[in-house]
Length: 394
Length: 74
Image 1 (cartoon, rainbow over the protein chains, first blue to last red):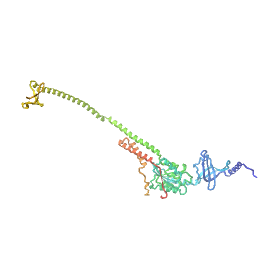
Image 2 (image 1 turned 90 degrees about the vertical axis):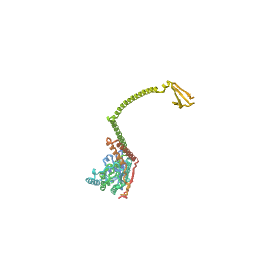
Image 3 (image 1 turned 90 degrees about the horizontal axis):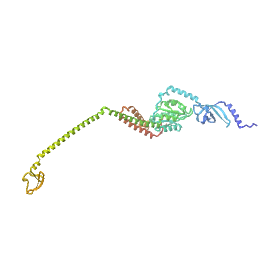
Image 4 (image 1 turned 180 degrees about the vertical axis):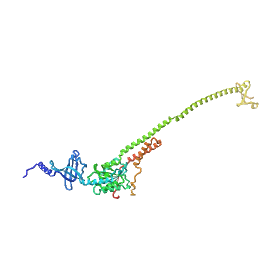
């Protein structure tokens, strides 16, 4: 009969057997249940194929050197030790190295195509088309159901809603995806749509997921596009051939929207600045004109009228003085004339004659100078030198 | 190709007003000394009009989305 073991003893013995038999192993599989433990930086995940799975851990100290963040579904090549966690009686792979699987062959093909197209000059700066500053009609080639499309729309809405997006739903990974994207680029270039530029975008993924963006035909289709093409494929660290040949590469779908659309708030600010600029210019002009006017009115020739007026004023004063003198003279002459006329009238008038004893007979205010003018009973006035008396002809 | 007339580009879009506004600001800056007050006022008035157009156009703007089918296209 075997001796009885404690659980700890058993786990320790199994650990010994396992860890001695599997020093370092290379395993190919697909990542699932990926967890990035933020505080420690450790990666926890399962590695699986279509029939089985095994737990895996990659310590924070080891995963720092990775150039990509693992994702569920990503096919990877793992180099690590099989270890047993005694406390739980579970075993796992302690991952030392992690590579996207198949990257050996793909990497070689990628480099080969990149060098070929580079030699042809497809990546040259002189071929890069300028992006419109205020795009109005923008084509987005992406998967309608993908997060990339949602992100792009969200940023566009916030940043520059004055635009119309034309969505062309295309396969963004797997077989036929390169052809699907090529076709979308051709459709977008149909002048009937009158588009301003093309955005090709999708989220991150494995090297295989992004592989269609390393397709030679797609690279040439992008190069030949009459419209500017912006690519936003995968993550920051992923560079595809399409990115090199595109007129502009964006790191992420959101970044693509930030690159191609101006910020509407900045435009409003610019408009406000323009308004005060307009105002300032007109005020400046007006001030200049006022200064110029002041200068001109200070000029000798423009002071002349005032001088002339002043001269005339003096003359007028003199004239009116003269006129006064003349009028005064005339008046005194007139007075003298009146005085002498009075004397003459007194001399030749009836008064003196009346005083000598004559009288004037008037009938109805008319002087009666002959006897025939009077009849018996007429009422007359007799004017003496000292007064009148009413009388009746008898 | 000919049937898609609806896709014809608007000619009095925001961009046109904005470009003209920039032109006017540049002209004002360069010609303020030499131009007559009448010309300056004319630019000023057009500038104000364009400013209003730009603001109105941006304010009433709303993101539009249209799907282009890949089926009817070859």
